Length: 481
Ligand code: ADP
Ligand code: MG
Image 1 (cartoon, rainbow, N blue to C red):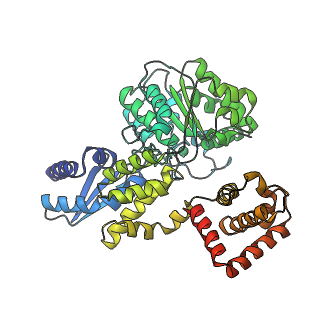
Image 2 (tube, protein in one colour):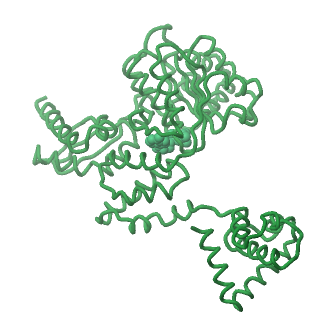
């Protein structure tokens, strides 16, 4: 007993120091959930709720924890980070109808073993009398699969996401249902899942008795098909219809699956009729969801539809700064600006890039510089390179030679327009991945042999006429910059 006590006391002091060192935000994101389990010989074992958190703590904080602990207790030489065993069994692949597991097993399926495992529900809920709040343990189970980093505190707000963020906050804070459903949509990696988890975390803090169910549309579908197979759709329905807040992520995956759509529609209606909050995310707006029944599409658009736009430079920079602070690493401004400028695809890639340069610098023991960043992210930077389009080439070349853009497509053969047109074809071949026939089509439906001829002609002229060669080179550089 006294050993446990002193272990707890040691941990309390280590925690205190960690908190001062890494700051409140990082502490809350990464270190708060840690509990200490035991000490065996010279090894301390600490427990975290998710695999993700374990990897993160191991990568970023384990050394520091060990050092601090050794300061408290010189007997400690190493720290082991383990993932808490789930209290409900993780469900593997299909058990099959005659495995003897019976309906009970099938009705306990929302603890997913595969990452990213953020799908959850407690089926035990549906067996309780209505109105009894979920027990603490149960609630912890519900949240064990939500990403602890995906909170409002960690969400950087900018122009592109301010509406979606405000709507999410409102839903999380509101005493009563305000708009139903909240429909969030936007491209991949722009923060839809983050906002949904943030709503769940906030509700858990503010309204602990509310039942929140977050589920991916894929899981919803999988569950439904399973329930059909085991003729257990009643339980399936009850379970969804007994929640206060239902979130379904990536609903575009439901499209095309008629029976699942039907069930989704009914579940959705039942919840909305009972004034329960529904939150949906998708990669497109309700009206653009192809393969979705018309009545469902229009129903989805009844509440508030909030889109998340592609990131801007300012938002990307803000996100990088926030992440760097969380990770407690110093990164030169120049590097941050470079990343924000170059990695425009989505926030997930941006984060990945930051993680990579931090990991690299820790590994080789060199500080982060612009050069090392370019080196480490070589492949990623190339993939994010701006794609030059044939339209841009035509425009630039027409401007340069002072001809009309229409002459890029026209049939005029006068040298004054034919030569620039050939240059534009040549540059299209050099700077884009388009095939000769594709290029021909963009130049007023010309044949691919015409394009081939233009490429040869320009090559020939370049070798004969240095001034012309320089001109083409200049155009190329302007287009690539
Ligand atoms: P989506 O679900 O839209 O594909 P996610 O919510 O999974 O995107 O976001 C991808 C990653 O980017 C996550 O790690 C998330 O935390 C991060 N992210 C996205 N938007 C923001 C933001 N505004 N502030 C901080 N992190 C963000
Ligand atoms: Mg997502």
